[in-house]
Image (cartoon, rainbow, N blue to C red):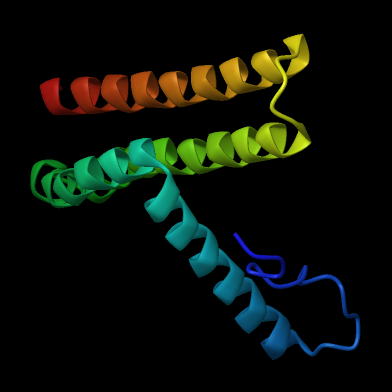
Length: 130
């Protein structure tokens, strides 16, 4: 990754208008999604699951609230995965040596992803078996 690949922080220039700030935020978000897709295998797997989960939620949901819960629980897994990837990137940026706190941060991020997957599984089981 080259310096400046992700641009500067959207908060770095207070003279920027709201439209420019919004467009910059959107661009940075798409850069983050692209980086996650290119560098995170788990993210790609979760997107593949999402490709099937979204239409399934729409078809099997049977109502707006059920559909929203099914979709939100599936999307939450992807959100938590990206946060976990961000934590891992920051830890890796600090240095390659093993450290108890670095290991703890990565383990907690992984546990968060696991909990999000378990939450989504429970939501899907409860709502579809209801």
